[in-house]
Image (cartoon, rainbow, N blue to C red; front, top):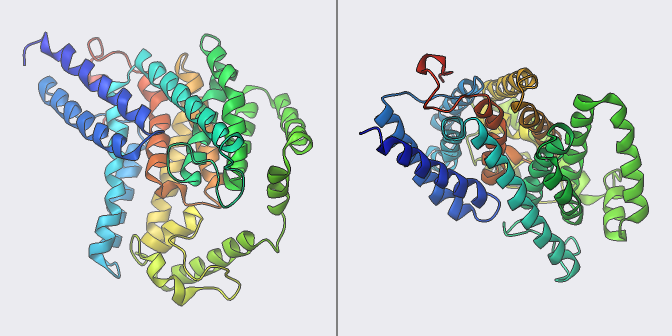
Length: 393
């Protein structure tokens, strides 16, 4: 391919990447289509350059996790059904795509887009709550996602990014500061306790990274919420600590059922998407629901579906991501994005104690984008960056 065509190809690939990232918070169907186009252009660019895919170091653990998933498919109770469900590992391609196409200042452009689209969906969520009466557990704000849990998870990740920019990015903090109220209110009115906890953990991590004294703000904000929030929100907060609450009881029961599944299938699990098939057999006496599609806990779900080795590999992925994000904190423009990545991991881990968010496609893809952006921001543009400096997966 001639040299003049390479910049056009790279620009086209980045434009479709922008569309994909924007669509993540709007439509999973559109996001899937745009990811396919972006992947095709990314491959064409690699072929034209004669290069190989590059990715942050944590990507190796994701590849190992994908391999462990395929092993669990082979030994699944229904290999065909598990193979279809395990297609989520194909989404890991987001990491090398973002790493190659969103280098240097393009990473910041992508981050601004995430905050802007998130703010737009947050405003719509507030309208749903305040105007359209999506204001109880039977009908909660879900933005444009079709499910309040996915919507609140995406809000959590956007809050992590926007908050990191407010605290660590002087040049770009104004817009994030302006939209933060809408993001926080939208998350509050989803009545999703798991992601309230996740947002609290994300903000606490950012305060620790910025200044330990900022942690004193967290209980003050919590007190203000309790004092000013409508009764739907305050009662939902108090229900978190009520052991007689049906959802609390059911999550504890799911955890006990999950441990029994792991005991019987420790090495390869029952197979992806098979927990719901065996759940009635392992259902705890204290369970409320007769059936559950998953166990509402990321570590327990992974171990039950894919086995303890897969869980160990997933833990390696988390540790590797955190370690390299900490390294990026001292790298100039990448620092706010690295802080956002650490906050996103904290939110994912704490929220993931009550929800299987790592198995939610939209949440997973946006999480991977946030984890990759700091590494991409630290890279020089492709035209000036020697190939031998690339971190290869």
